[in-house]
Length: 144
Image (cartoon, rainbow, N blue to C red; front, top):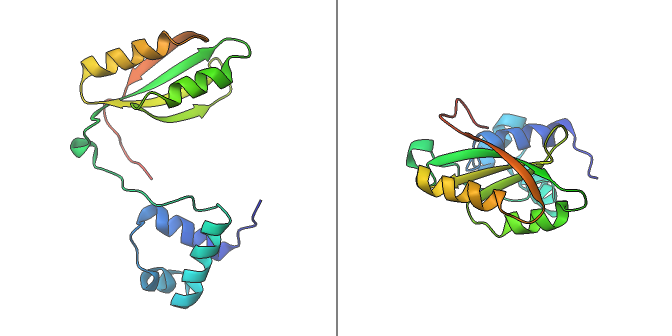
């Protein structure tokens, strides 16, 4: 596992805030040269610390405007199969393995409440899923 120094940590946090920040802006922020910052970012990508860059769409502009957290209880030794099946559902945007009363939490997105209802039903019907509990996201207060 790569060891991050304080400069790496500052760069990562700055990129979380603005993934389009220029190397000149980042260099000013961390007090290093532009070439040093570019080298650090390339190294962090090679090491797999930075896996990629993406766009965050404003919630009111997202075509998957209806989102839900789906808590999933999985049967014994069924996690791998359920994870694979969830990966085949395009509306499942994120899947977390968690501790506690449930085994997985999926974040799903759909264009309408009716579509989200179908997605949640589809998840509940998967082989190996014992039960689901869902919460529709009403609003996002902040996201980093």
